Length: 151
Image (tube, rainbow, N blue to C red):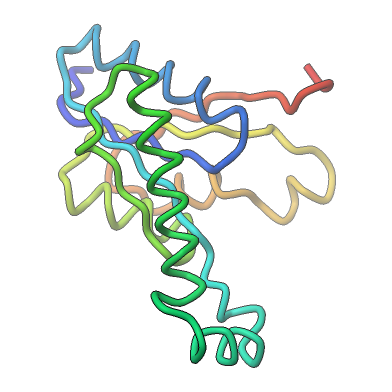
């Protein structure tokens, strides 16, 4: 398969760099472009009253500050992996939904993301990788990552 636009989706864990490196290898082999995304869950979904109080008294809001920090983190990460900083996307929303929508928006023909290969209850409840796969507008590559001390 000849991929031209790759979207790599990472969370803010230590394994993110491993996932980006896999995507980078694919991009180099296929002479494709790469975009990176991390999705922050809306804080208001969980703490509506606390969020409203904090939002009223803070410039940029709690989510805005979280997005700024995530953007700095992801920009630094892609630079270390020799990827252009202008490929960075930070979105607030439901990870699977936002990843699929961004892939469609940019015309990605491959989504690369990490998976922990959960077992038992975690597998039954699903994961972001599983949710992205179902309904994705393109191919999905799930890179198995290991939390420190498990692999």
